Structures are given as structure tokens and as C-alpha cells.
Amino acid sequence: MKKNNFKANPGNFILKIAALIVLFLGAVYFFEYWNYSRDYETTNDAQVESYINPVSARAGGYIQKVYFNEHQLVKEGDTLVVLDNREYLAQLETAEAVMDDANAQLTVLGAAIHAAETGTSVSRDQIKGAHAKYVQQQQDIRRYENLVKEEAATGSELEQVKAHYDVAESEYSAAQNGLRTNIAKISELETHFALLQADVKRKKAALILAKLNLSYTVIRAPYSGRLGRKNILNGQQIQPGQPLVSIIDEGEKWITANYKETQVADMYIGQTAEIQVDAMDGKTFTGKIVAIAGSTGSRFSLLPADNSTGNFVKIVQRVPVKIAFVSEQNDRVVPGMNVSVAVKKRVKS
Image (cartoon, rainbow, N blue to C red; front, top):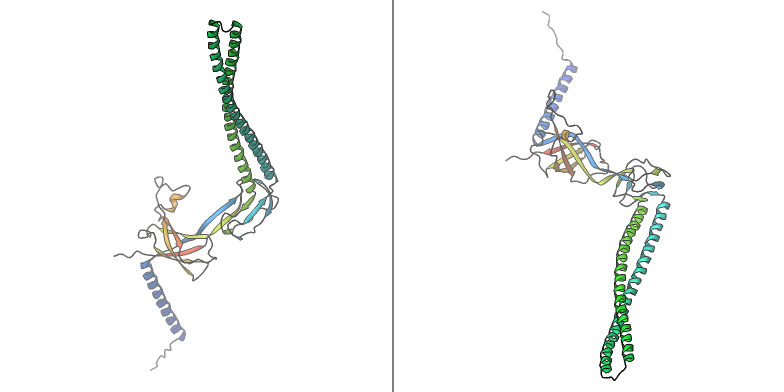
């Protein structure tokens, strides 16, 4: 009787072992993922954010010199652009000349007021003298009238006394009118002085504005950061308000993680988060939640979806969550980079 001999194939044995290893590794990975997902809410819909602001010109003119290069690190106050300032210097000199003229007029008018006040003092002294002379002439008339009655004086002498009285009365009245004239003149000069003071304030404001416009010809970095693309050259004409270059605030970066609406129920401010940047494989940063949006991201869009019209398809919405870095981040972490975020779930008692 013939016997069949079966020999084991080594290749099949290796494949079986490899399959068992793959199944084992897959089971381990699945268990670790399941165990991790029980404690953490994760998302890869997240990016690094930072403030990126345009540096705009506050004055127009020709660019005299550009002092920066693309993507250059700058400090607050560093000079970026210098404009041709000759027109602004001329405007400043004109404003200074107008201001000097106004101050000179104010000084002259102040001197005139002082002279008028001195004249008022003189007029008051003149009134006192004229009044004393006037009173004396009144007494002389009464005395001579009695002397004429007693025939101790002649009528011609009485007429002379009356003439002196008329002169004294006229001088007294003139002195009073002169005082009133001086007071009216002082009032007029003070009114003119007040108007001139207002004019001086206006010209002072014009001088300050001219100095400001001159200072705007030197454009400086508003804060420390990294510049963007360079789109301007020497000799280029720019207008007030024109953006010249963008600057990234390197001092403040954060993560905007767009979590599913089903994941944010147990999130809270101050909650710890783990951040992994795609460009830095294996590097993990620590963060914390500092803000949770009050609505879903679609509500902030220019044209929010209106589900009351047409057919409705339910789509899971995303809620933006702002996460700040707690550990010091690397300079290689730049705005726009994709990251993966894991937030530890709230421990339920």
C-alpha cells in the first residue's frame, strides 16, 4: 500500500507568523487608541494662529529708502521705510512762522492792554484832581456871592469865579469821560486778545499737525515680530493709508482647534491640552483652553447656511476652541501650520 508524504511549506509558515504579528500589533494599536480616546477629545482640524497686521503709511509721498527685507525679524520701533520729507519740512517751517507771528501779535496786544490800564490809573488821578478843583470853585462861587451881597466884591470878580467854575466843571467831566473811554478801550482790547488767543490755539494745533505729518515720514515697526513679503521699492509713490508690509506678532501665538459639536460638551476654560505640530514630528507642546466660541464656525461665515429653505442635510458642525501655549514654543512654529490637539476629558465623579 502506497503512503502519501506531506511536507510543510516554510513560506506558508512565515506568512502565518507574519499575519499573527500584524493582527497582534493591530489589536494592541486599537486597544491603545480606544483607551486613549476614552480620556481625550482629539482633532486634527487645527492651525497655529497669530496676529498679522499690515503696517500702513500715515503720510503720502515718495519712498526715499526701504530698510527691511522679506521675512526679517524686527524689534518695536525699528525703522522700516523713510519718505521724502522736504514738503513736510516746508509745511512745518510755515506753521512755525505763522505761530511766531501770532505770538508776536499777542505780545503787542498784551502791551497795549497794559498801557490802557496804566492810562486808566492816570485818568482816575486826573478825576481826583479835577474833582477837587471843581469843589473848590463851587465854594468860591458861594463865597463871592455872599461878598457881592455884602458889597465886599464886585460883579466882575464873581463872573471870573463863575468862569473858573465852568472850566473846572468841564475838566472834571472830561476826566470822567476819559476814564470811561479808557475802560471801553480795555474791554475792546481784551476781546481782541481773547480772539487772538483762540487764533494762537488754532495755529498751535496746525503746528502740532505739521510736526506729526513730518514724523509720519519715518515708518517704524509697531511691535516686535517677523515681516511678510516686500512689495515696495525706493522711489515708489505711496498714498496715506496704503499697506506697505505685514508684520507677524511673534510674541503671541495660539491654536484654533475646530472641534465637532459633539466633543465640546465637557470642555471648559483652563482645561489642559496636548499640541502636536505636523511639521515637528514627535514634538509635543502643552497648552490650555482660553476661550470657546459662542457659536459654530459656520455662523461667522459671510453667508451662513439657512436650513429653513430647500432640502435639509444634517452636517456635524465645528466649534472653534482657542488654545494658548503654556510651554515655550519653538520659533519654527509659525502661523498657518497644521496641528493635532488632544484635550483631556473632564473627570466625572
